[in-house]
Length: 204
Image 1 (cartoon, helix red, strand yellow):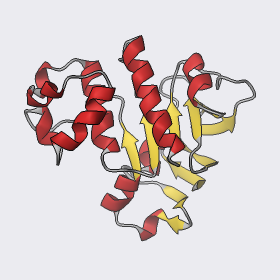
Image 2: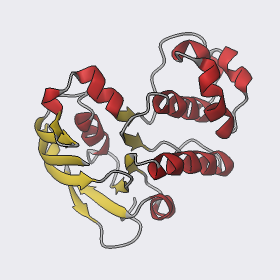
Image 3: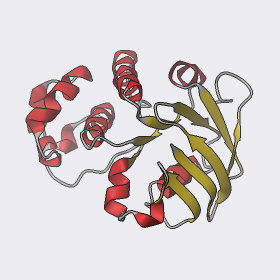
């Protein structure tokens, strides 16, 4: 279980919520309200105060690189640092089954990142992150650039990880998607979160 208690940073907090193993919680709210700030703070990518605990172990007790592998942040626009797609993977052949399941050809590993569409980059970043076998996924609109078929494929892949016990905090502006993927819904307002009373997280 992930516990967030009194989490604060400029423009955020205090935030308190919990996320159980195998649970998907949606997070919605207007643009600029602090959703990305929250995900980055939980992942220890930006300085913050308060407590973040995973399975009884505080974030401060875990080296930052290890924490970020266990509690993985998936940016809306992922970062790339090498020319070819496959250069971003320790074992491209091992990644191919996931690549195929997201409706991408294995040959895309040879492609220059600069020639990829936004949706292709988004799906490949999802594969890249899942290869690390994280325990918690912090998903910042992971399907925003995808067509319906690719979006369904991504949702199915993430549902399979959820069934294996992975917890997910999923930012989405799509109320229908929130209802499909999540069983709890949080709404962010003025840097704080509250439980939503409807089935779609008051997505905006």
